[in-house]
Image (cartoon, rainbow, N blue to C red; front, side, top):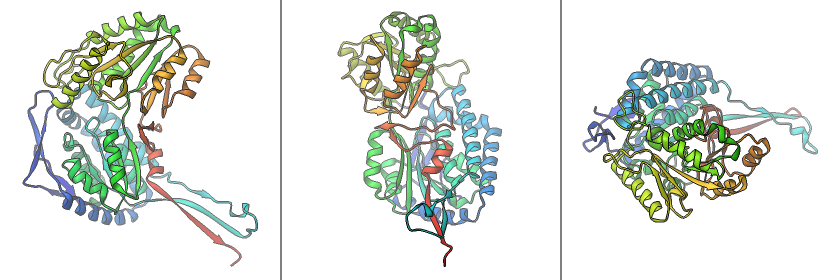
Length: 477
């Protein structure tokens, strides 16, 4: 499949190309152009024209276009899912799930197009002011650069592009070089659904080349990015005076309380799925599990049994539970981190074997020291750390011992303890009797500390992607 950049609705090809390969067996899926600074400049100039054209669309027309795009993707769900599996390596079941969520995200964004609201400002509430009335309204900010990751290239792009278009902004999308073909198809659907071709543009290539040029362009008024903390910091240092929404790293923690002895098998399955879905390549994958000492051994036994029962293999097969990680480099890093933890005194409970360049067994490791990478950093692989704690307070302290703060969860029957956990854990989202991998697309989603800035979820993203304009009338004039 030969990919292309999409600028102003026109397909742009280049001599120099990047190969996209199926993570499972490294077979060629397709190619994309290697974009450069001139391509980025052109895309932004075209997007400025698209922004002007979007101003001529009513909120209802934007609503209808997003709604239509959702219907088109729903009808083509098998096509999108198959391409997702080939590009990302996620199982076909996971791919179908992502397509369904993308349809929902665009539908939610469509509704928000009709809800970009303002309110009256009580000027007369200030001393000495009389006869002045007014209001503020939210207005689009202009061209938005959307830099999207490899793990959910369809839905996470919808989370950026859907709200941006709903609010009346034009977009330039820079997808991961591993998963650009899916994003190109999405952009074509949005144009087919009724958006001006100039309003939806896709740049392909490497982040340090075309992505950097997009970030540095002063005509881009906002960058919305999902990816690593390191890249997020680089983007903010180079982008200059513009708005940012950053969804960055995580090593999500879960606490299993002492009163959960009767539910250990159920919890092990839920937590295991939270850690091994998409081979652990989810921003809110369960990575660190802290279990009260009274139920620790029983939980560990159940989790090990669950992990060993998962089928690892070809993601195209309907009965595969865990597919490959994105590439050999990622697998090399994950195995290095496992070895480092073991060398520091951790104990391998199950898994830990590399079945191919990109296939790693679902792995459970116990007693992982705090100074190991598996505890401190984001593994983004099929690895779950299980450590023993003696109290809720110790679990809270351990979960907070992290540079990240995206989501965390607790399983307990103690209402007071659950509230203490929710109040004291430093995260953007807390789940009680649910894994932190839980996310619905309408919720405010984002983190604190190095997990990011701003919130996603169509309603909340629209607020990030608009500015307030205040309007005052002097009735005494």
